[in-house]
Picture 1 (spheres, rainbow, N blue to C red):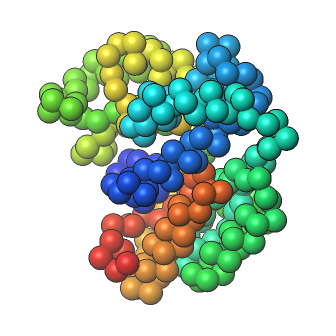
Picture 2: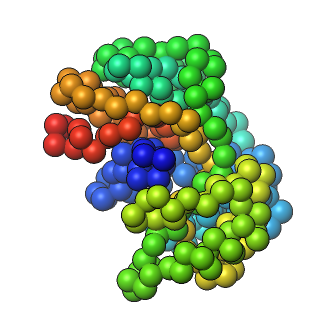
Amino acid sequence: MSGHSKWSTIKRKKEKTDNARAKVFTKIGRELAVAIREGGPDPDNNSKLKDVIAKAKAANIPNDNIERAIKKAAGEDSSKEYIENVYEGYGPNGIAVIVETLTDNKNRTAGDVRHYFDKYGGNLGQSGCVSFMFERCGVILIDREDEDENVVDEDALMEAALEAGAEDFLTDDDTVFEIRTAIPDLGAVRDSLEAAGYKFSTAEVQYVPSTYVKLTDEDSLKNMAKMIEMFEDNDDVQNVWHNWENPEDAEDLI
């Protein structure tokens, strides 16, 4: 897994600045609103809400902020609804891209997504044009060293994960262990590992590519990096998944 494990969620992480953290909270706030609208504000009786809360905690959003967001979403006018859409297309040199959106204005979001593809040398495709290149599954990432720099016991974690119902345990990344689950089992595996004292940096459903594409020329590297940046900066975009193998090569170009 040359690309997925190393880059965890196959996205360029931009959570180092206050502005980026605010965007993450805005996006998760929308997911909370949708989950509450569908199943109510009690996570014990709403598995989708429980999953979003876990995602918020993994993103280091304080518990007080999460609770306020839940109360706000529970009291919001039900006439304000967010629509979920998934767009598929290609970046430079045929990089497969999947964009998950959550919006209150489908036309605005569709126009933005098409513009970003066109502007940076890609093109928006039809539904299904690239999703066959990905497997959709639960992914849990646990750092090899905890906050106190204690090394996590690989054998113990693997045994705990597989006993909890995980389907696969990957160790080919130098910084994290990657645990994969069937989508319905993600919450149970996550809760079991959390109860055992493990802390995760990611626990969510992801699109994992089956193959990867390496970019070599500077223009393609720069355009692909900028395309992803534009997607991630858009509040309507929840996630961007792709099969770009070497995004680190573009870090100094943008």
